[in-house]
Length: 372
Image 1 (cartoon, rainbow, N blue to C red):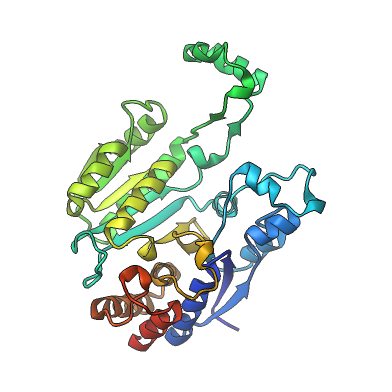
Image 2 (tube, one colour; image 1 turned 135 degrees about the vertical axis):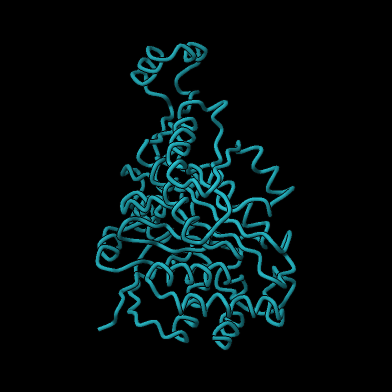
């Protein structure tokens, strides 16, 4: 019997290509694992009205962790229009399966390292090494939204907040509302995770990235909790900055920053910006981590125009495999894999199109495997 059971979810578009690349490397590194395929993505939304079938949820419950490829997501109206005719009119509403996975399994921490590897022609600067901690289950991604705004909700909002009077003459069908829901516990968890990581890896600082001068209650809660928790780690400075200023400073002086911690939406934004500093989404790995389960994925999306072309950069996926190995406690294998990835990037002989090369997805994976 294999030591690990790993759910294998290629998903949509290039998700299949990059997980094929991951399999090449995992076989070479000889991880003692069984890879169990599961259904997720647009195909199953169209056929079944559910992009995350119940059978897949059950599969994950019987595995140690998950390696995930990519998902295609579309706005509400487009999603409904692409349903199989037999499924239309039955009340199905599209919801991102990866967001649902994060919430179902309480994968509360989204870990996104953004590291510049020597020799990458796409690096903004060669000394960038940022790690983003993004709260992963709440905030604007909680999915509490209304359109049109129900009259009873409008009544409650108007009763409890005087600023809603501005909208009292606006037709309810012309109002869309998304609630930003942050809890104290989630704020504490993500900040503590960031500080624990900084302590373990001897990082220089932790920066909390929010907007408390405008979004006073939700961002204010995050900043206040960060200040409390920072007192438990006196050797690690806590910096505070607003999300808009953070984006400016990351472009100007990215090497000044180390560990960033923030809420869900701001984390989504700042992690993509940080990824671009080190070569773009082709190098953007991530781990969705809970107390006893984790899902690892590249963050580049499904890129449908490149699907099945064996063209896209698999480095984000291979770096996600490295995170998975770390999480499983396979530190030696994780170190070997990252070293091999760094060698391939530095040599520059095998590069995909985004790095101004002509190598295929498979070519890159095979070269990394050879270095192993």
